[in-house]
Amino acid sequence: MKPETAVRTRTLVAILRAVTPGAVTQVAHTLHAAGIRCIEVPLNSPDPFASIAALAALNLRDCVVGAGTVLNVGDVERTHAAGGRLIVAPNCNPDVIRRALQLGMSMMPGVATATEAFQAIDAGAQELKLFPAVSYGPAHLGALKSVLPRQVRVYPVGGVGAADIAAWVAAGADGFGFGSEIFKPDYTLADIDTRARKLVQTLASVSATAGA
Image 1 (cartoon, one colour):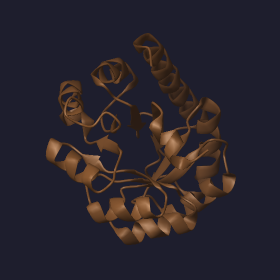
Image 2 (spheres, rainbow, N blue to C red; image 1 turned 90 degrees about the vertical axis):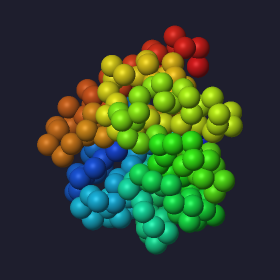
Image 3 (cartoon, rainbow, N blue to C red; image 1 turned 60 degrees about the horizontal axis):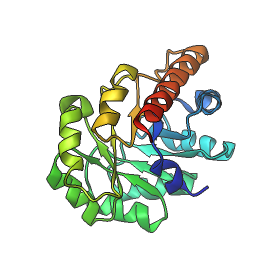
């Protein structure tokens, strides 16, 4: 499965902020068993490239792994060297977008406004991270989607919970990124499993009702 295929479905990205290399493999197995197929290690986590390398070595079926909070081209290249194939950023940096795409990676730059969204698209991005989603809301997404090219997909991230999924999907969300809703270092594996399954099941139910 190509990395971009996983990101092009209406899916969930698990954001493992503050995960450690010693914990990341057990967390990843738990998330994968619960139905998560995209895993992001933010680069402000402890030794993030070691965690990304550990995730890549697992070779989980149909699962794309990579880095979040990517702010420069050098970190794109380090992620690629570690085996990561997903780049997620909180902002729109055309150089980061272009380098990730040159390396054949999936790229999700952060945008909030139409101007930022079209800057990202001009740089080659086809998946966008609406961030922080809680600051804008589903109505904002609906307005953005009305002017974006049909093939461009948008993923709300930041302050979104399971109870919010239906409203965001109705507004046109193509997937979601979840951080503390799904992972914190002090969550047990059982906690992570329960949280991940709830999100996966909620999205599946909402998507079935929405007909997509």
